[in-house]
Amino acid sequence: MPLDRMSTTESKSVIGLTIPELPPLPDTLRLRLGECRTLPSLPAAAARVIGLARAPEPRLTDFAAAIQQDPALTLRLLSMANSAYFSRSANRVVTCHDAVSRLGLDATLAAAMSFGLPRPGASDALDYDYLWQRSIIAALAAQQLAEQLCPDEAGQLFTMALIQDIGILALEAVDAERYSSHVPSLRDHDKLRETEHRLYGCDHSLAGAWLAISWGVPAPMAAGIADSHGPLEDGNPKRLCLRLSCRIADGWLAHSPAAAFSDLLHQLALLESLDIAMLVSVLEDLQQRLPTLAKLFEITCPPDINSTTLLAEAKELLFEQNLLLNQRLAEQRHELEALLARHDELDEQHRTDHLTRLANRPWLEKLLVQHFDCALMGKRPLSVMFIDLDHFKRINDLYGHRFGDEVLIRFAAALENMVREDDIAGRYGGEEFLVIMPNTRREQASKLGDRIRQYLASQPLAKTEGEPLHVTASIGIASMEDADFENVNAMVDAADKAMYGVKHDGRDGVAHYKHRD
Image 1 (cartoon, rainbow, N blue to C red):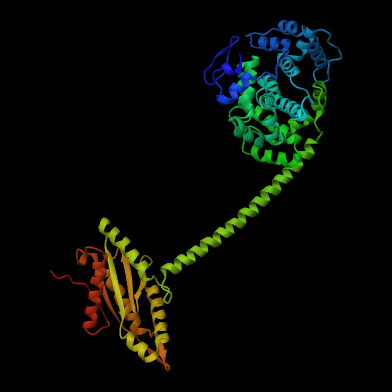
Image 2: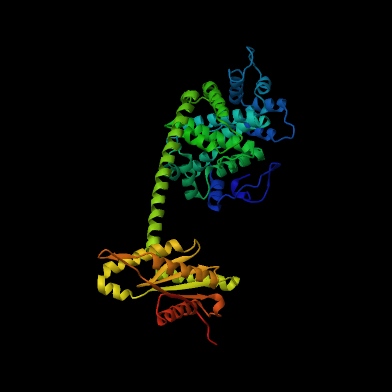
């Protein structure tokens, strides 16, 4: 069926075949493919072989009868059947039926489908030799992987992997000059697919699936071609074998195979169904069987590599990459720690009074709002203490502001040592200090006030001319049980009033706010 008449989303019948539901081809590309008269096609005998492959129970006799009508295809199959790749004895086969019997239906189908495709040297625009090398490496790799993961699918996977890139031929046929001039190197499959998506709205795997459908290829095979370039993942062995096969081919033909396989090892480390031993086995088998298969398909043999040495180099590169990555991560972690430390330092500076190193007034006021709201909502106790050092202006006037600063610093250090872990002490301004005491009733708050007075009475905060200088303080306390404070400012004002009451009564004392009705 011509591609321009195929539905892109519905299943339709093509010569009795149910087409799998594939992602839609972009309309423009679908129309151009339908009008193209130079799309790759198959000889009549190959087309008949594909038709037979769709039968519920295909018979060797029918395959042989279809193939022997084409002498060239018959010679190809006889050559394959008698090659060291397929022959298990010294007996040569001479009939088409015996050749099909020895090859099996899957290999026969693969040979028939590949027979009519362009050969190396058929185009100056694309490197067909590279495409064929990639195809046979992928086909062998898919077959070897399948023999270990899903043995019943090995033959079909060989064929699917062999023709998974036929969409490249289709896109070149429909847009030869533009395609060959815009696509990057065929060796970078990811960039190739990105460019195809930009030019046509899809990549060659989907175009190849629809081309396969037009040939009458069995539905599961067409669906596999469309899905052959997805990410590596566990859960579906058949899909994994096909997707991994092309990555193995890319690595084998890469300019730096060790680097390519190092990247592949990194991806395989995330999978549970594969291990390095399996990959080594596949590569060793490829190394032995590729020359024979390349000769059968009449292409230049892919470069020979030593799988053991290659994977050893790949592992070493992977180790070096991981080491460099760990070093970069360590450097970034150190940079992040330095940034966080700097952030903490700046945050600390933003919250701290530069002289006393206690909390500054803006930070105190922010914490006050938080603790007041929590106490109000949770009906929990809260007390606030307002401290003013007595006669501090006289100290500054007599001994100077630097001396006064030293007194403030020493008092702040003593206050920080006396408050409890959950309390917050800060400098409210000048010689005024504030202590926030969460979950604290007035009796407990009063004990802290008494400790502060006792400390100041016993410990001088400075010395002048060798004589100790004692400083007293006026302390006011407001607690949640003292009144129904409307807001935190009202509570601080209450503590301030209590402190001024001490000042009025002669200083050096502790007083609680008394609410007046």
